[in-house]
Image (tube, rainbow, N blue to C red; front, top):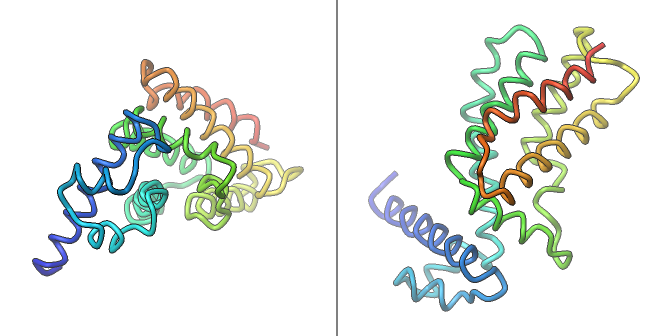
Length: 197
């Protein structure tokens, strides 16, 4: 990455960070692109070079975590023996990342915006890497006779997705007052036991 690209990346991160802080403080609808530009001391050109709209700032956070799943978690899971081990470890790492990198306040702001019915929710985009990873693990679990076969992998992914959203939402509305990385272990343990053959 050359110097110009590094500077562009820093500008994008700065815009994203400040915008999320403003959304959290004032509410998404009450923040304008002009205000984000003023607070970051950038230009409209710089903003629109990185984001089509302020809504795309949330998409950037989803892209960030999906990249983490692909680049960091998938390679490490290859060394594990069972689908159950992989699922438990994946959820542990996912919740640890959300807790430490996003934090409850950014997460709460993202959830608030996702409830806006005027736009498609990023949570429901079917081809996100998150859902593909979970689907592949469910298929693997069924092939290896670990997971029950009276449910389809698609149904299992739906259950997992709803549990993910539920625990993260609950954690964020509770202002992060319980350790997400610990709470998830018991919850996903129960769900995985329910899906075992």
